[in-house]
Image (tube, rainbow, N blue to C red; front, side, top):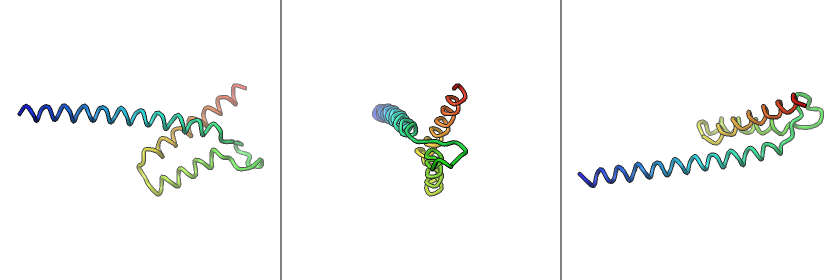
Length: 95
């Protein structure tokens, strides 16, 4: 009986370590992707000046999500694209 409880505690602590690693990985992924999105150009509604790289990225993420639905990476990418668009709109209205 004693071995079973010890095994349960070890399994539980291993799950905590694993979930902490997942959170750290997700945070790192979000930071890297956010920095990548800041480099992309956005022209707003007028496409006269060329392609809108931010909207193109959103289209690619949508296509990938249709191919492999439910992946956490695509969900994070959607959230980060939305945050970047809002950040740019805020900066534009403040100027």
